[in-house]
Image (cartoon, rainbow, N blue to C red; front, top):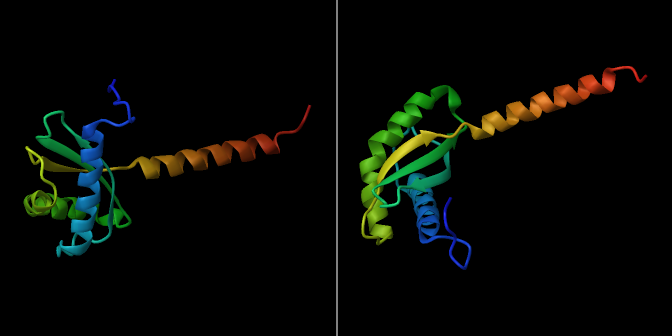
Amino acid sequence: MKKQSPRGFQRSDRVAEQVRRDLADLIRTELKDPRVGMVSLTDVQLTPDYAHAKVFFTTLNVEHLAEVELGLKRAAGFLRRELGRRIHIHTLPELHFVYDNSLEHGMNMSQLIDQANALSDQTPDE
């Protein structure tokens, strides 16, 4: 478990959030790869030494997910370099993009709950 600082967040949490915001801006404004399109960065997890960053993303273009992932993977070097111009930390992390399916999973769970509630409303009272 992470030990929290007196203010509630560790430095690594603040750095991860800054990386997420700057990467989202870079993807939106600087990345010209048509495969990437509209992506949202949901989270960034940094290793303790900041050498690697897992960048979780979602996209509305799920049917072309493999192409989106390939575009992000190919752009990782460019994005890392541009990130280095914005964030000044000792070690700039290597970027690893991971599709975040938690939104889909949440929607599926919500639908299952709705179906279960609808079934329970249909059962006769005793």
